[in-house]
Length: 503
Image (cartoon, rainbow, N blue to C red; front, side, top):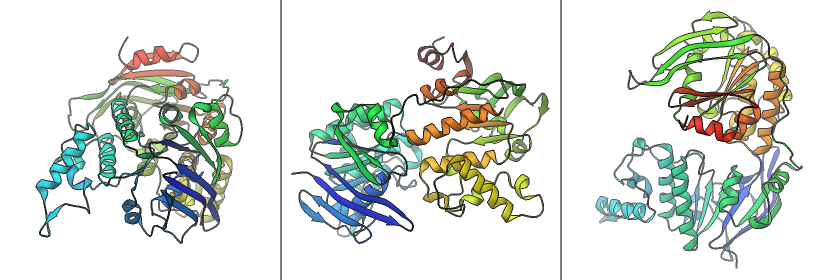
């Protein structure tokens, strides 16, 4: 008997059928991966399972150990042994690790919270999971990766038999990923069934027993991992066979668009500490300049300082089309012809509660609508054209941004900056958290923009992405420029050696 069965699940939103007869099952001690493009229905299906969308708002059947379940809320699902860890963490930053783990379920004596017992149980749980985290530490004092591991500890404190993990490694370091996978292997031996949602197919093939693919709200395939391949899974996800992921490029370079000389960027807390140390580089019109390096190498800080968005001290010289410019704020950078697709689209790239029209025209409002009087009709025409050019999947420019999939949100951020008519475009992790189909569309757009003469500077933590898109690659290590390669010179081994300081 299956631990979990979801049969013919249908979930509709106004104008959209998000789930169209999806079927999914899970066995005890199984690691079952759920994959698909953004917007395929993965998170919606898990919200149905976990009671976020209560019974009555969807049709279909859920069985746990053969018993039909109709969850009215999240607590009802938790009581049935189902725990879900979403991409967006739900921890209370000002509470301690222990308080978060047992929030709403605190052990009590005579109606009073038993703090000693709470921290004892929390410490035992953390120790059992081999997590070197003090239960008394405030969540606010932990890194994102450690917070993710605390979320997992919190879920397991409920004695979950079904654990859902939605992009759990997105913010983890390699050592934290190793710790997480060690925990998950231990849980398998205890009979816990796990549903794993991830765009990282390498992890999926490393850990999973079976893979189910969703596309356009439908189940299009479930196969044993050992009988499948990454190429086959990608083909099921996008509905076509996928050849080379990266477009064939042949860019013609023009004059130098941006030149940076002797740039230093200092830490906001330790004023004499350099995050970027005496870096000089240039990029030509029509060129894609990739910037590689490990986390903490200073890549994002480099772009932020040039763009006038760094809160700390910096020094150096910046030239746009041969003319020295002083940029002290993002608005000045925009005026000089620089656009910046930031790493965190939800915090810095979008107004999530606003519609696409407002998001797309925000940065380029002066160019589109005029300085003194806004012309809503001009803005609407510009937004509609941008959505069409970038193939944004949305009903209209008046669709609210947070209802879009990650890939479509990223296209909106890109469209916003393109409507400023930039000469130079900074891309910081342009495909983070989006699926392979959306990635290919972003890659094609980057290639198209370069062919049109735009100078592009791209930061990416994905080495194949840097090597597949860039005409030239700069490598940073601990704030210093440690290597520079042309497309033909670059190899993964060479770039990684420079990124780790092995020069």
